[in-house]
Image (cartoon, rainbow, N blue to C red):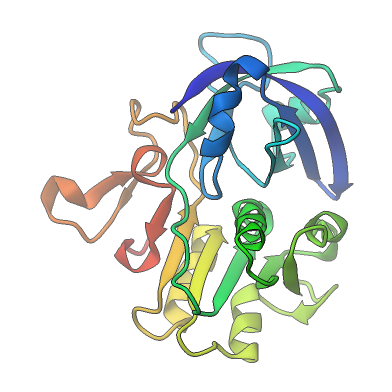
Length: 264
């Protein structure tokens, strides 16, 4: 189920550095879509004045409140459209198409779960942690890396049911190095299942560091224009044969088996 509707901004707050979090309310008429908002899926938001030549931007769901009829996104101000979004005030409306893409699959019962995120890629992992807690799981380890301490959004992240292991590239907080190095330093529990999201170099480093075929569901970050598979702008190569090798992140993902992705 997908809906095209106007979301209402109820909160939009800076988290430090260039990071922001916004809470968006779904109109009651579209409330039936709330159960379809899952970790790994995303929304396409119009950030700016209505313009047929201006595409929406993709944002992962970071938090869900079915009771309030709202969800939150985590974003970094990197250009004109996200800067416009950072100026959105409570009560302002944003045109949105949601929910899109696929979701993370639940872990096998009894297997250790680890979350590995880089930068704003932590967003879908936070919602996954919320879902796991609602299913009765204890807080799961979250290995979260960023370039510097101001990009960790620690107050925001610590509000979720996670056991936080932070790392910074510039050694200003937590583990002095990359998130993958932090994970390796702590050791991988036997039978662990991993969920990851972040820049492709982080995902490539994770795959290179893990024992072969360790279960990893990876949510990809890709530039998208349409979000529905019409423009083919988010194509990635997988290990399939012929035409089946090329997949679209918006339509076939964004969640993929990490081992099926071809190195970028």
